[in-house]
Length: 153
Ligand code: ZN
Image (cartoon, rainbow, N blue to C red; front, side):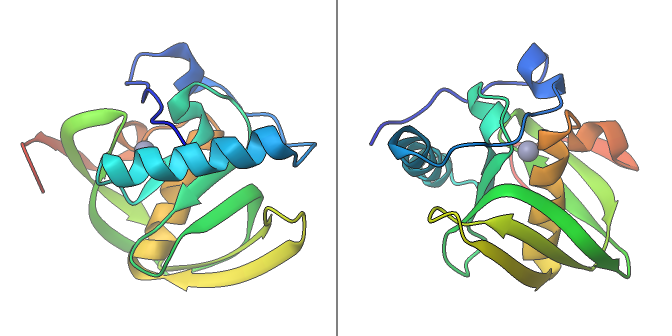
C-alpha cells in the first residue's frame, strides 16, 4: 500500500463532477486500499477519490464503525436536518457549521460489485453527505453557514 498526496482547495480536480466507476478491477482495489491508508494516516474519517486527484465516484469512510468503501454511491432517502461542525483534509485548519440531513439511506457497490444499501445517522450520515459532495465538485466551505480558522476542532 502507499500513501497518496491529498489535493488542497484550489486544485481543479476538486471542482469536477466525477465519472462513475465502470470497472472494479485490481487497480481500483489498490486505489481503495491506498485511500484508506491515506485517510487513517491523516486522521481523517472520510476521503473521496478526487481528493487524491482521481475524478471517479469512489469514497472511503470510517467514523468508528469500521471501514466502508462506497463505489458509485447515491443517496436515495434523506430525513431531518442537523447543523454541526465539519472540517476537510483538503481544507486544512478551516472549520465550518454545515447543515446536513440527520439520516440518509445510500445505495452503492462494494468491492465485489454487489449492490448495498445502508441507512446512517449522526457523524456517519454527515460524512457520507460530505464525501458525496466531493464527487460533485462541492466543498463544505461552499455551503457552510459560517467558517472559522483553527488548529483543531
Ligand atoms: Zn472533504
